[in-house]
Length: 313
Image 1 (cartoon, helix red, strand yellow):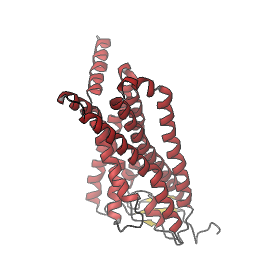
Image 2: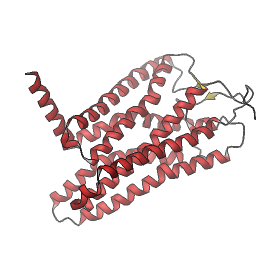
Image 3: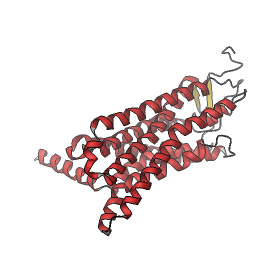
Image 4: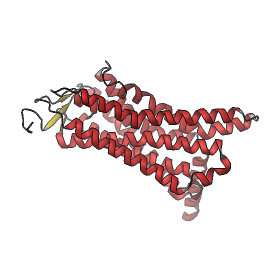
């Protein structure tokens, strides 16, 4: 099928969250604040891990990558949303739409895989602490991180190519806040059964399998912790997992509900909320969760500030 104006479009129109100008102004202020907090919080995590030698551990190596993913994920969609809050006609070119879809899928998939790697790190730390340094070697950490990024990128490239190749027969109005797979395939004027199958298969690879690995890791962790006789020991063991478990709970639930059932009757408004949750809410909350619940991060911040003050004197 040739590429022409009768089958493909040169731009898409996004309906956004609201057509009311007052509501859009309020959302603009809210999203600006959330985006700045995301950049500040995750940037601070990256800076602390880089500056403080005591955070040069496998757990914080993965956290560093997670913060980088959150910054990039938010930056792939939020700036465009902010611009659209100020415009009457919310358009995005075909090329920019495909680019945004690619990065959101790649970073989302990478994040789910990184969370699985972090769960394995916690499993080794609690279930086999004497061998932790030997098992979680820099080489293994680099390998797990590289696999997470490469699988995320490869999966995204395949899904983006298949989605953007679908002809729309001139239909270009997306009832969404961003270029998102399920919204785009609804515009297709051809059979999308194959695309729906690819979405399910893709979700199994980057979402369901990592989720199962996380569940398996924490099943073993809970079994080991419950055998600890000391109440203080159990609290300390669970405390080392609290931040990661909180982020995991936030990340996997909504994604499983949305992407494992592409034929579900979930409304467009529900899908918008899911995208906003991953693009705005979780990148903003993740550094707060890790800093407020993690004594090592708070101690590192104190050390860095103390050194900074000492250098100024």
